[in-house]
Image 1: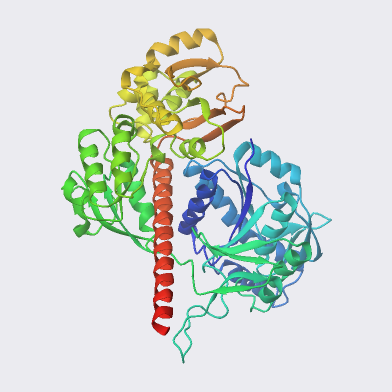
Image 2: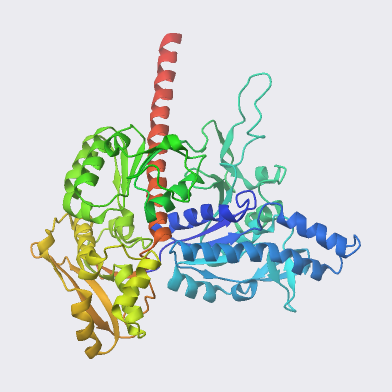
Length: 588
């Protein structure tokens, strides 16, 4: 069941260095969670192309010739950033495939340093997108009829993105360091009036070509204009980009600039430390106002201002932050902290599947009463966006879920199938951060059972008790499954066809090589979701470890921030409308 397609282009103004590739990962994952297939077109890191030009100029005695050699050198900038982004996606547990110009079949004609794209292997993209959901490719470069590397002119990654979107029939967004196109420099106010320039809500192709070309390559605009291809220009994590189209331009005083929110973090273990590191990179959007830990003096390998650390769980949870992130685990303390945060007016993000399984309905009621949201995507599947999938509006209801929902047991099973003793496989899982010091809930199947309980609630509003889920432990099931042949998997299944008799089970199964759950390596998760209208979808993602879980938590945080921004804009709009009415009344 393929989803809609979006082409995201990440420019050098966004990708300042390798660390900022994490921003691209967040943006790609945001759209994947929304059900979109994604092609990510990547520019070289900021300033890198200029450095390569200078090297070429020096090596050629200032001639920049032969041009095909120069093009091959310049191509290394985009190729490097694209390859690194693919590696960062993998670390975050997001499936994806790296394309080169050859893999993409991106043919171009014309001058070696200013060529025009003329071809694309559409079938190769469709195959990779159906299998992986994400394709990463370098922008700016293609291959001529002789197979030589050519470039598409300065700013040519914009052109690459539009060419791919046109060939595949997808939406296109150019992700920049600004929230859209403005009538003049948005950083400069009018010296007479003090007003800031207006932003284009929509801009015509002709008006876009009247800009100075520093934001969007004019060659790319002409390409879109000739083909009637609308596209968007906006910021990372934005919601209201400028639309570039043939329609007349529309200017507005409303921008899409990010709003900074206050965040408190409860827990600084394996996942909590990852979340802290990722949030620290979002300083333009997030201010961390408190971190609750068991021992404030413990060395953690993180640079954290001393004033942020506290061992007072209730005080940090109820500090009045916009968002409280709960990552301490367990039921009693975590439940008290989450309830306290909600009653103090904070939105909540949690990865605690046991808490959501046991008290999810109660906590959601508290959140609803306060006009707040509670998010728990990381509680099921890690970076596999299953909760987003089953809660997406689509008319039909979910009737069956079957999946590998525990990365720890999947890793252990893979090691045992490869000949490693069971205890050694568990030890290796712990060393890699896939298993807790006490892995009993994972190995017994209870952890996967909690995830089925969460899914029963979000899919159908059904509350299952702990004893309603039949769980088979890994040790009990391995011997039986080994006799059956096939690939051993710890399979969690949820049958929702009859809501009066919901069936939930976790057991070791020997699956066939053509089964949707057969090709699930290491700590990865996979799930097959079936709807009442017969639709099926297979999801994949890494389900254990620091970075996949941290990525899911941060994605929830960013979703809540967008929710806060939307509410704030609606309030500002209503206030502005009211002020206009009062002004008119006063005038009359």
